Structures are given as structure tokens and as C-alpha cells.
Image: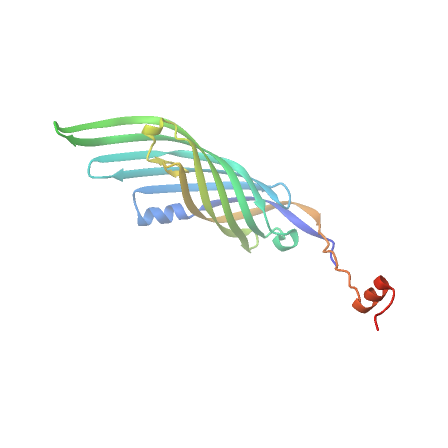
Length: 225
């Protein structure tokens, strides 16, 4: 029985293709994201992602614009056994800290009340928001050094960069400015092997077999007639 396996450690770089696909269907939001990760061992990998977002929204009484960049960093944990993953497959969870830096602007806002109609605007201002992200997902190597994968991104807003009453409608890398946000990503990646490590495999414990008749005799000393 094999007691160890060689695992190639890799550096990966890739892009999220869901952002451009969504932009073609809905012109109000454009997201572009790329990432790089490096294996620390057969289980853990460092992750750094960055991107750009351009968002616009119009309603009957106001317009809103948000555009800027984001950066997130963290670690990925592979739940697959080494002999299953073999340096080609990943199924696990990622934990990241995100930073969103963007310009927020309300070019026009109209409010109607008893005294009439009021029109105003809020000029562009630089905002810095913070969030955490948990990303379960899957990745598989289709061809040599080429992988595809997906993730579900669950995010919790730490700080919107403004007071709660003035929370921005959209934060790059995060999404709608609610306390909790969710999204999904589909990645294509290029892998660069840089080192091989040998990982020991856990041996499964074999169950001991007892003959009931012999066990009964040995424990009681005599048989009942």
C-alpha cells in the first residue's frame, strides 16, 4: 500500500470572467478582477486578488455613481485528501480581508414635499470601506497547467467608510452596501509549478476480527450444554 505521494506546489494567476459577462447583460455595473495565489503546502495557499468596478444606478428621483478599485488578501484551505487532490484539484474554502477604495457621487437628487420640489446633488468623495469574505469553491486542472473553477462569495461589511445613515449604495469588490452581501465568481487560471513535496498518507486502521465461538469460550471458560 502506498504510504506517501508527491504533490507539486504551484503559483496560480487567473481572472474572473463573470464580471464582463454580467456587464454585457446589464450595462449598469462592470467588474474586473484578477488574482494570484501560491501554495504553502498541500493544504494551504496564500491568496491576493485585485480589481476595478464601475457602477451606475438611476431611479425616478436620483442618480448614483460609484467607481474604484479593491484589494483582498487571505488564505485558501483545501479539504481534499492529498492523494485525491494530487496538485490538480481543489475543493475547500477561502478566507479574505477586503479593502475597497472608490469615488461615490450623487449627480442629482429630487425630493418633493408639502412646500414643493427640492433638487440637489452630492459631489464626488473618496471613500475607503472594509469587509471580510468567505469563499467556498472548487477548482480543477483541465489541461496541463490550465484550470477552471468557481466560488461562492459571502461577505460581511466591517465599515462602509461613512456613517451608517450615509452608507454607499455600491462598494467595489463587495457589492450592494448592505451589512451582508453575496456573489459568485468563475475563474480561469494558469498554473506554474515551482516545487514538489512528498506527503505521507494516513493509514486506515484495520478492524480486528473475533470468532464469536472462540471468543465466547475464552471469556466464559465453558460452554452451556
